Amino acid sequence: MINKKIIRTLKVIILLFLVANKINAQKATERSQWFVDDRFGMFIHFGLYSAAEGYWHGEKIRYDNNYAEWLQYRNRIDTKDYISLINRFQWDELDPEQWVILAKKAGMKYITITAKHHDGFALWDSKVSDYSIGNYTSPKRDIIKELAVACKKHGIKLAFYYSHWVDWEHKYGWDHTKELTGITELEYDKYWQEKVIPQVRELLTNYGEISIMWFDMWIHHSRTIITKKQLIQLKNMIRELQPNCLINSRLGLSIEEDSDIDFRTLGDNQLGKEKLDYPWQTAGTVAHSWGYHATENQWKSTTSLLKSLINNVSLNGNFMLNIGPRANGEVPYEITDRLENIGKWLEINGESIYKSEAFDLRTDLHDWGKITSKTENGKTKLYLHVFNWPLDHQIRVTGIKSTPSKIYLLSDKLETSIKYDQKEVATRIYLPFKAPDPYASVIVMEFNHKPKIEKGLVGESIAGGYALTPKNTIKSEGSTTILSPSKFGSIPERLIIEGNSAYEWRVYIDQPGTYFLDISYSFQDKENNSSMTLEMAGTKLKHNFKGTGKTVGEPKSAWIIDSYNSHPLGEIKIDHPGFYDIKLDVNVIKNQTIKFNRLWLKKS
Ligand code: JFZ
Image 1 (cartoon, rainbow, N blue to C red):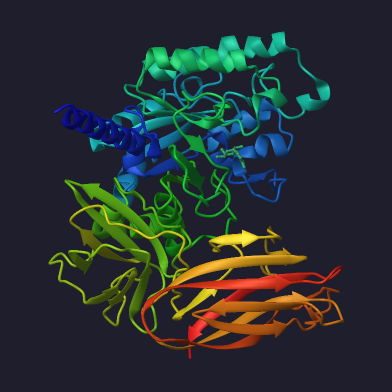
Image 2: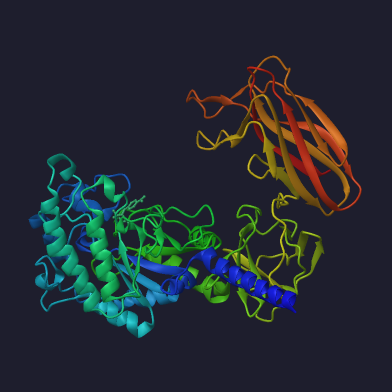
């Protein structure tokens, strides 16, 4: 009797623990859940700089990254001259609703507009500062109001970018020249109290519900004039005026420093590399500049932008893609083209993005693409995003133990089952010959419960072998220093081995037969006294390291680099399907170094 009670209580505790963990895993709060669900938003950089198009008096903006919105600062322009750009705007043509319609078409769920960028110019009719659009237009325009109305009409959430730290107009606002000339804390606080605080108050009072206040200070507050106290003052005011409004980490307070910050913004165009357990976002551009730039020419492809979105979602992240409209409101063709194509893709495949999240397998496990997942009503769906349709029309999925109830193409509304084979943790899906989508095709694996997985395995490559690398080991002893690729990747990732070291990998082999192994490394010593032994399925293979010499990285550039060469180790007979451990023992004699690149295991 008592035992039963205890067991029941324990069950409840375990369940509560699991539920709490699930929430923790993404740490979305009630406030930020919509943001995590929506995944995709639009960024708009629009301001006086839009009319300059990256040029001032015939000269291109002075900086390689082409950030056209930095023109005033880079080209050292006085505010009284800079404001003349207002005359180039085509007010009759300018219609912010068109941006909202474009966002809607692109499948974006929210819009963040630069209400005030670093130049300090307010895009709304601000009563706080004369330096506002209302003062320079007749009839008065208020771009923020117009956008707010359009957003409401089309069901898009509205967010504001507000440059709180940098302001090139206010006498005491921050600009980087002040690193030389100095400014007192008292002076900076004057700017803060008479411009920042009342302007943000206006923005959160007069334009309805604001979903995010997006700030932009990319260094820690301890390294500049701004004080933590000022940041907290600003944050508290936002919480008071609009408790549901999210605040990003570029306010200058990191998530670690203040858990009340709603999400982290990574560096510009910096995509996620690992799963994070809190909401995060990448802000990205279609080319380089945020503000419109006339001679921008390196446009990212639709495929690459879509991959950025998919990559981030597969790591629990968000993607906010920028448009830089011209001073007549027009959005460059290259941008609308990408956005419309992404929107068409999302119309078919959006289920794999909205309300989807990371799956528990390692993010780089499969070389055919990325997995996102969704659990609803007890059912789990895995969305396999295939970027490169395999030549042999097979997708190899490693590490899933549970049997799917069904596999089908997301683009197939009839959900016709696709054939597959599954042995233990190896699933082979037999695909149609032609990829259903030119950008990324999505295959759905459906389960009646959360699928069980096996972690730590090396994934089977799209080419049908296994690459055992320094990073996908299950065990390592001895040297563990892994160096990243260098010289533009001509020198590969490598593990620096000195002394006696041992490494272990685990694979699942579903197709018995004769397997072949080779090892790639660089060895720069003359004496061949260092050696290795590899053991797999009861077979031992030995190898004495041989000098690999040098190679030329680039012609005529004195780029002599270490050569990494492949060396056959021999064959291994695999009689039955199963899990196999591969143990590599490396014996490097004193003063010698092995730079280990990878092993390659493949059915011969
Ligand atoms: C800032 C702005 O200066 C820029 O004009 C634009 O608005 C962009 C979205 O944000 O630029 C940054 C901010 C952060 C980093 C780089 C550029 N960063 O963290 O790498």
